[in-house]
Image 1: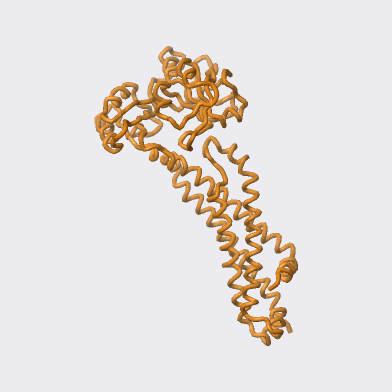
Image 2 (image 1 turned 120 degrees about the vertical axis):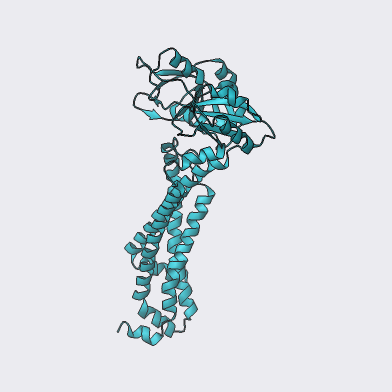
Length: 388
């Protein structure tokens, strides 16, 4: 079937073709976006270091561990350094923006994360100032922050007694070499928080959210994890030690199997769109029954009819898929900024594009083959009689 005839058939019912095109575009757009979310959620796990362990309460991630645990963990064979991590959970500008903030030990945090590259200011300046902080490049770009600027954070988990904000002075801006480090995070001194609690400026009990353990070269992670867990088996607070990859995976699965849910949504959308396209092509083939009978009577083969209708369906779906992918690319930057605090690293990568285009081709082939097969088996006499 010639390209001109295929185009004429598609334009015979322009509204139906446009709606079908839009349906495919919407389905592929959703699949690309959902796949990008799944990829971003999985990237932190795949990029995690095998030399870092995380020690948390065996009861819940939201239960703090005693400060006294640090020295005991540091004494376990195979442990190089221990770094305290405390989720701060504050808001920038009263009632305004949210992003991740962590209190860390400056002397051990940097060496444990060689993936962190300070591109403006210096890590030493951060380590030397008690109220100093490090911010990611993406976070600095979002708010226009510069080195030396003061960032006021309203404490929600750790509110000051007088209601004032916590002031953090930017001493360095970092870039991440891998997705294991999020560029939309603020890191400050854990001791700045601890001292405020001990001085009564914050009414909270001192404690540590999690301990980051950096292993020595050659240390066996499984053996170290078992030793740390056994160390606190009888309390006062039992712990659960995991690899960094497993710790990241816990966040992904905190609300259930998020990747499976997202893929199920995408699959359901494709399933519905497939039947819509199949119905469209069946209607198109049925309306052309007499035309196909005339063409066969003139000598056009069954194969010619089959290929023509299949190509028509394929063209419609591929064009719709290309539109859906293009829209996903255009909107991905805005979506990435909107969900950066929850899904860092979101982008429409080659994997998502390949999946979207592959599904478009599959939809076109499968939806087109059924009516094309039926049309190719038509007898010219029967086809001509069908419209009499």
